[in-house]
Image (cartoon, rainbow, N blue to C red):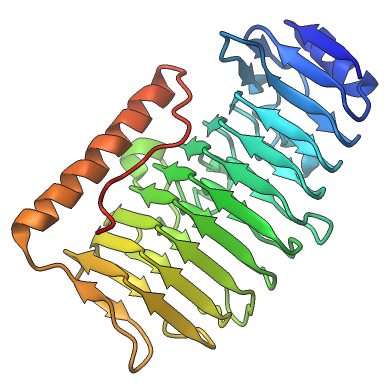
Length: 332
């Protein structure tokens, strides 16, 4: 096992090309990247050096917003780990994963020309995204209609999961699973305030968790996920988007949205202890309901706790601070 310490793009590109399974590449400074980074090997760790939060800036490929060349970090290998980095200004995705069993943790994706982090292709299986933030991504080439915070879509494989991630202030949705017939799991994830053209100039749908597309039958499992402040170009906190996959939500929360939960097309729907307030309506199958929080004091307490946490996350991101895992004491 070898260790590489890099502080320039030339060193980084060379280390990624040379590294083999078990090797670790430590990035010790922010780097302006003149081209994309391709991780085609497997078992390599790419991470921030101790005491540093490196920004990988891909402005040099910011004008490339079609095809794979505009991607910042393109992961086609498997069993790799990316940890503690800020990826910004790529012309397409900040990170795109097409390999299996990769882990991306404690990273920030922002100002990219498409979705911050995207998992796609049938080979992309069992990937785990943990404690990452993705915000203010916008695809100007298609008027804001594609750039989500996170996406697991376009025929991605099985077993992909998001844990403790936050998608906010993106031109399109917080999460998207368009054309996705395999399972996706979301745990402790939060989305808010997407589709606001005053922030991203262009705006797409602007929904929270978009869980499918017409006819898509992939299973969705969500636990302690929150969608709030979806009142801009979009309307829906939790959006099946005409998908028909079996869906299970446990301890989820929707508030300050036009439509709290739009899940009426699911082939089967299980909702356990899901709650909402200040939403105009829901679209749910007959016999399925959510708990309406009517106590205004309780509403104010929950809104304050969530808003305070989310404002802190945004402030941290803007100051190049990785937030990591958070705990919200609202699940009584």
